[in-house]
Length: 70
Image (cartoon, rainbow, N blue to C red; front, side, top):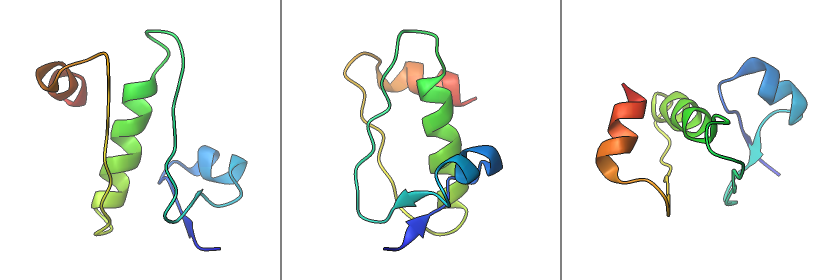
């Protein structure tokens, strides 16, 4: 099983190296707990490595996502 590191050293240690390649990961929690922030970091770190990813939200629009990313 190939692992894709998150680029966040503490999280990668907790996950024993990262997420399994080809899987979908659901990040769930109450508002304000850092779900979008975590997703942005993981996606950005892996885009720098040439990997692709997707972010799907049923609660926030594109502009709000971009504001959080800044």
